[in-house]
Image (cartoon, rainbow, N blue to C red; front, side):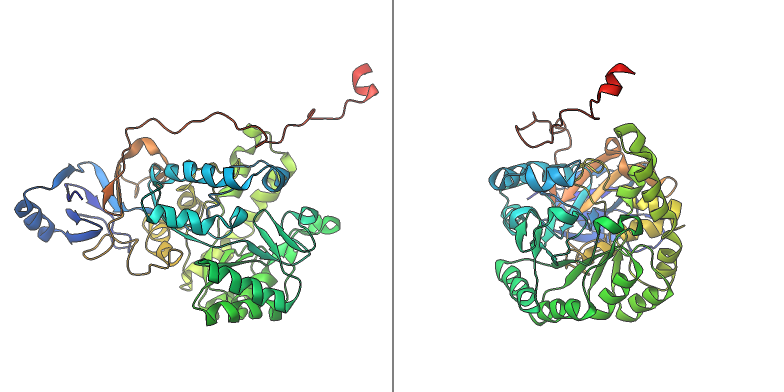
Length: 442
């Protein structure tokens, strides 16, 4: 394995400390030294590959703490649940995951996956069979029969797509144990969902506090953390009280929910990138004006409380929800930092910490990754320009000069992966509207 001596760069170490001009020495899957010691050891090494990082930022690889690598970029729940084949989904996920590395992502969490594919993909990446970042995974998300955001598409029992419907406390315990036995890193609970006759109210809580505690207690007894999808205040509060370790979205919090999160010590992954993409660019891809307004309001209605959480010391992690048509793989993994700066008022340095050092929590590698320091795992990127002046630079793949993942350099010179459509993977409608007689004869 090649050693790398990165010189002349502007080091942003991921801790939130100010940037500084220091060298970095990498050997195998460890950062051996930083600063003058890196220069001394690099000069003595004799066989290092020297990387001139002049006019570049040197920083930890990005960690995407909310990514759906098995979804294959659907534009609807119908497509996601009814247009995916198990074997093909595994092959497509293995093909897509290389895009993350080539966008500067060296670690990600996929909390709920189609067909329980996450464990096999993670293990194939770890074995060197598939090129991809460090990965942690859940299994199927635990849902009650009320369903989640897919509503009536979720069956009353059994599994569909990424969902496992648990109807009783005994089933909650059994499914949690089954997934942990299979090798998951996280258990995911879908705490809120949409009720067809109450859609105007947004997502509502569909799990009780007692049910949440059953899952958390079962998982924690077996050494496994719990992550939960919560898109209203009561769900966020009850998830924190039940012992959920990491809460996705946590939008529309009130003071009660915020206090529960602070007291519990839970981490938050707001994942506002999907909403921001739809609000800012939905008109370019045919999104309805009503949907654009709903998601714009979710950002504006949640940013203040999320900033208060940050100021109170609650860990904020960056997630992109990549895997949908609005968040395709390899394109938007860095945008959450931009959202944190624009809407939450974080500095670029603070936002970078959310996407690196804090993200190590989702990889269950706290203290091991997300920081450029001696002894840490060797996930490092070199980016042309100064992201502390413009955080959006980190979302421009053209500025990536080097990605070192697990101590190995990623070949960024290859053409971006492209493929042909696969029969049946997309919804194909007869038309975009109803062909009435009046329409023809108006």
